Length: 363
Ligand SMILES: O=C(O)C(=O)C[C@]1(C(=O)O)C=C[C@@H](O)C=C1
Image (cartoon, rainbow, N blue to C red; front, side):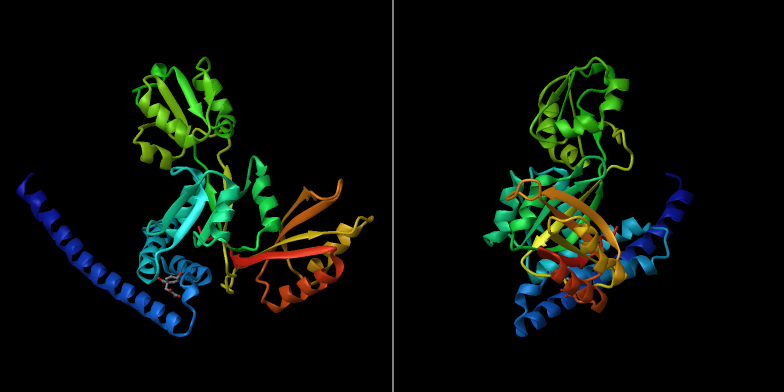
């Protein structure tokens, strides 16, 4: 390195060192504040309310509003999410059950929402995820509810119907599929492992780039990544988290056929979230079996000026040819406009269950 280069770099690196010292001081000051918040909550008998989804959403939205760049809003949201996750772990380490295994997309959604300080508890079925929180073995659960290309996740919907848990958050995750292998080039790949759904999501890419290579469906993308690391000639299609977990190099990134492939997850806990200022409420309802009854059911929402962001029907399991409707609306159940519409709905619906009010995803 030339002397001039050394000198120029030295000036900027001194500045970085000074900033890091300030950041460290500020981060520890923030952590002490979070500890104080924890003590105040405990003194007021609110020890169960350490994690506050509405407050976290407000902090992140405010940071996005203040962000002057060059860091993107996605970058600063990630950084502050991790800062809050670490601060919260000083108050109370959170445990989060999710549809595993480690390295799954649901695991990525859980980390995106709760940060790396949360303890992740992978479960082998959606039923087990619900059960872990219902039994008090985990504080929160994360389960997938809908995918932009595959539609609703039936098992999550059915369990939402019967669970006493509340939806207290949502996570929206862009699903990127990657081809990972130890091999240095595509012409050395002799088989491709993945979950059937991921193989389907990359069908056209595989036809174009690996037309004669057998596709082998396995139980999970993580299992596929593990096999790709173990077997010569094998490749896997999986998310980045699985590549990291099994240390498999990504040969081609983002090979999904549908570039906007997105999955929505919900966070479930034992408590409702408070009002954050930009909230959603999820409901399940059923209409009496008469002409126009769904229309009548939705009328109170329209009249109150409450927007509906999702309407999904599922067969009612107890009666043939009857349906229940999963409805998401804008607003929190404690806001007067929403409360009024819900009171009206209660009159009209044969069945109504409020699954929870929660902050709209921040991303
Ligand atoms: O404000 C609170 O209630 C806190 O506990 C502090 C804090 C934070 O670090 O900002 C941490 C955890 C909560 O989920 C929300 C925010």
